[in-house]
Length: 100
Image (cartoon, rainbow, N blue to C red; front, side):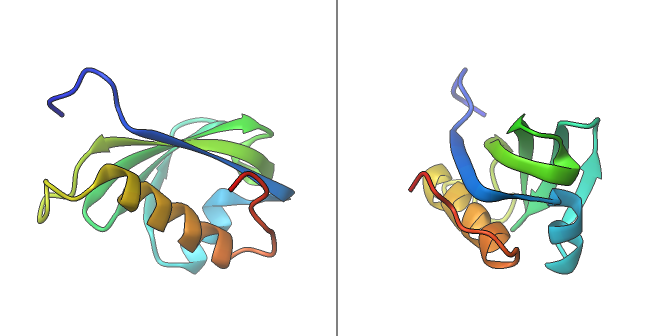
């Protein structure tokens, strides 16, 4: 990315969610890095999901950072992309976002 700082959004949920399980359920490609970090391919963008409360298997809060913009749309608004990803993750789980 051209900027030194990656776009990041934070999400806090009312109940813990199993991030890998939700990603599998929504057919979003991912790679576990460790107990707290997951690399995600979403709409041809590369995202890093890092839990800030809990682990990836039971996350109550997490940050999503844009590592690489979408290959097919590099000028897409990063905040819109991150918001869409979080909305899809929350919609596919049995939880509610509490920090909107």
